[in-house]
Image (cartoon, rainbow, N blue to C red; front, side, top):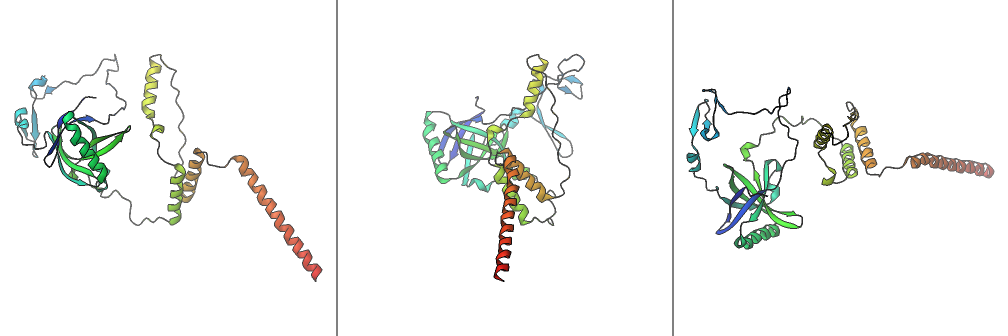
Length: 301
């Protein structure tokens, strides 16, 4: 992996030289735009709207658009000279429980590596202290010309405990959910909640190995078939989705049954057929007891 940032973690008078590495990567399907007529690649050119000519990248600078639409040009030197205390520092501002933050604020994750041998001892000290306290460090950091709040926590990856930096959004960057929730007049019965609990128990836990990107696999299979390296892709008919739910309890019961069946916990058809026979036998015994009781009563009379 290639380091994307070099700096230091600063807490109190302690400084830990570190490097950051991207902890995640997206593996979605990426397409290229081409000319449908001949397959030629479609390229985008940087054209000045005043001169209607292509502009070399070296001649392009940045500008800030004001509220009235005016563009204020800013040079790279002016942006580089801006005062930014967190430019090369991961500044620790406090220690809290991770539950105090809503996951909606989390943005990106980065592995933190000690930059040299001298940083190993304070790195391990920070890691052990966070593990012992059960807390995370709240920090400020500037990455790619953007300052952001972040969390510094311990992550267990393949048996190795490493420090991880989670950049977050600023509070004013999280949109309010006003008008999203249903009307408060909606009521939920206790039986419905209990049925949902049964469904959660029947469905079981989470196994990350069972999740795959089916769309990416389908695209790769289609490409392979068109290159002659795989069988032709056969379109599978999608299962019909049920219509509008009329009886919520019936839908929940069916969901629980389907979840149990998928896990192999449902009774076999043979066992289900035998069950009524047992009930019938029980009924016969009960009838026989009643007849015997009647006969004994008559004799006593």
